[in-house]
Amino acid sequence: QKERDSWARQASKAQNDSKQLMEAIRIEGAQKELHFGNKIVSLEKELAALRESLDREVKRSRQVQIELSDARRIISGSQNNQRDALRFLENSLFTANQQAFEILLKETEHQHELSNLHRKILDQSIELATLQESNEQKSLELKQSDRDMKVMEVSLDKSRKGFLALENVLLQQKKRTLEAVNAMVSAAVRHEQEAATRAVNLVSDVATQRRKC
Image (cartoon, rainbow, N blue to C red; front, top):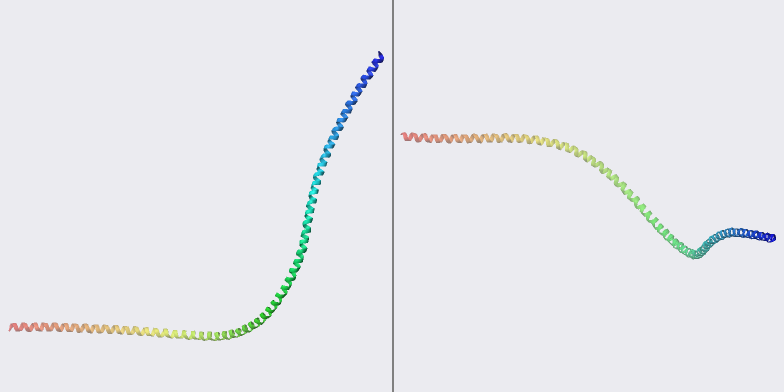
């Protein structure tokens, strides 16, 4: 009986130890599972980040390839443009040389024209100087004429004043003459009237004497 009890206790203890061990194993497994789960989640995030980065790098690589292709086309086009530019430059230089030669000819012609123009200007300057001298002489003559005219104006003014004074004298004489003539006419009219009155009175007296007789 004791031996069975001993085995029972050992079996119970073993069972309890087993349960504790299982619980410990379960807890440890759960912790490890949680740790590895977190680890896996972290790794998945890193993997997603790496994929995104890889996608960006792929896109960037494609963009770089496109840019390189465009650059190759641009370089090729630039080389063609450079050849065209060189041909254009050569043609431009040829045209510029022709134009420069034509301009040189025109400048030579212009130099001749300018020389002729300078001669004409010199001749005109001489004519202008002569004309200025003539104008100065005429100006002096005009000044002298102005002075003479002023003297004549003074003399005419004096003569005009003398004529006005003489005209006033003549007007006064004419006035006095008219007054005298008017006085004489008035006297003659009065004399004729008086004579007529005397004649009428005489005729009247004669008629009266005849009637008396």
